Length: 166
Image: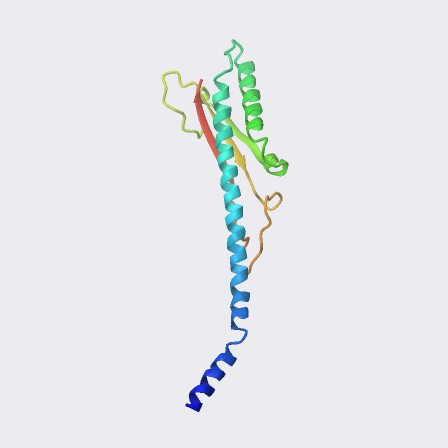
């Protein structure tokens, strides 16, 4: 009986501090997972805002009255689309807002290039593309350089596209 009591006291004594060591291993992973969740949820929100702004810009292009001079008409459309996009992303912080650019404005009547234009009899549509690139020079969030991961967490480049028939 005495041997069993000695074994129990020895067993308890050997476990002292084990939970602190386990916490030391688990805590950095919990912090990392929480950080990644916060970053990707913010990036998801930015992407949805970009999509909304691109759609609002494409819809605003419909309101421009056609002119005889095609060049002025397209400049009016470009100016209105840019103003609409800026007003829709105005609520974002300045450093985030500055990363979002009007990547491309394609008029489908010009052939569309690499853009899949809607099939319409007149084929007069405008495609609005927004882009947010996060390279090493401009990042919203800090990343860690870990031994087996180049940058943790990897930050994606965000794009949004919208089409409106004119």
